[in-house]
Image (tube, rainbow, N blue to C red; front, side):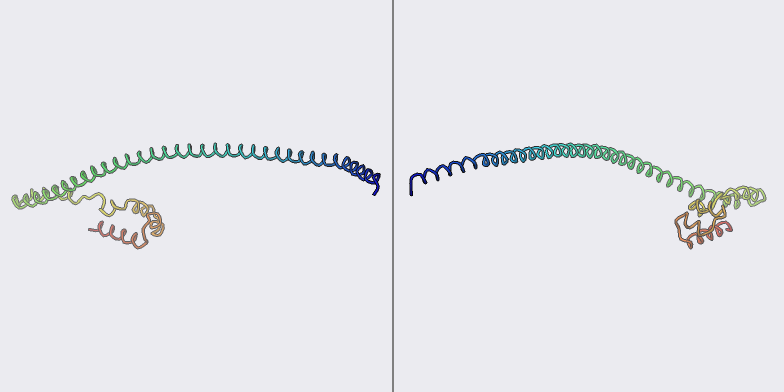
Length: 192
């Protein structure tokens, strides 16, 4: 080969290299541009994630604070209810004691009235004793309301209003048979 062919080949190679160099530069710039765009998008994404994390942290802290406030309020209500319960238990015990004392006094009074009236009738034995006995007997016999009526006042109130046995049973929360039995017992007490 001749030297001029070498020179022409080297020249062609130089021209081709010169032509490809700007294309490589453009590709490099395009890659750098896309890399910068990707970095910018990632930075925006990271900023969004940080903002959402801060909002989530604030939400969690507000929920925690609200939960603590509710817990404190519930503890206050529980302590108030416990205090009310102890007061109710104390008053219940006092009322039970009073009821027991009143029952004892009533029994004693009943026994003393029975003994007193029999003793007076036996001792005197005349018509004045009969008058005394008749004056004592109305006091003993005068029971204002039967004991069954005292136990079920709502039931008898509904019965006096003319309600049916079924509606009384529903309202009082009893069975129909129970209501009938209670009404029959009340009639028996009144007749005695």
